[in-house]
Image 1 (cartoon, rainbow, N blue to C red):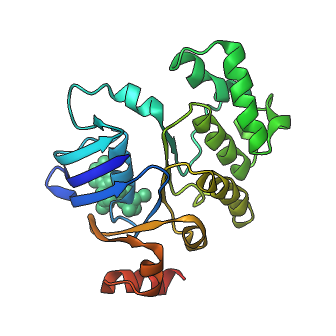
Image 2 (cartoon, rainbow, N blue to C red; image 1 turned 90 degrees about the horizontal axis):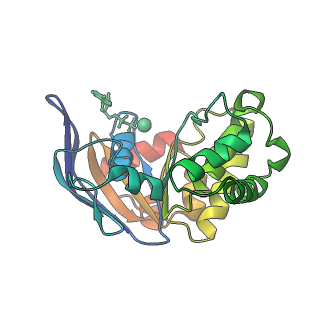
Length: 240
Ligand code: ADP
Ligand code: MG
């Protein structure tokens, strides 16, 4: 479903991604990890065209992301993205947050958007909060709303960029639980995270990055039990 082939990207003289390749099949849960500054956010943002790249190829569901003829807004509408800092619209109620993309981007009626949005809000356990504003919710609740909002768009895949790293420790699990449920239902997911418990539980593959390159791309058992690279061993020793 997502194929990255020799992706290279520079910021001016600085090469941020070097020959990054990986494949994500339908239903795969791929955890992307690695030290801070290794290019994880940049890589995941190239997948839905949020970050341009200069060389290589990215194909998402048969669509070439780097092709200037590709309609990137249409592609983005089909891929859910959840960021570290929730990024809800602060001046809109939770219900409006859940429906605005559906009506404006997908052209759904307000009724249909409400029904779908509230079904997902219920699913993340927050139906009672539909009339509140983001600032009235905790970080963990806001992130669950952000996930519900992405799901209401019927995405073909979900991208997560450190969805729990801005949360207080006691709120991390409520967000991870929602993500585990999604993974178990077969959602195709690329997840940048340092939560190795999550990775061990639901990932089928681990992509380990360092200095802009994919250093390991393997089954999780291999990554945790017998990482091939020195850099991955160092990383695991520090994080676990
Ligand atoms: P990670 O998510 O793994 O922490 P990032 O993808 O955010 O890494 O960043 C990778 C590298 O690219 C870092 O060295 C960072 O400083 C650099 N970088 C990120 N965004 C920009 C930018 N807009 N301009 C220049 N350098 C950037
Ligand atoms: Mg990052």
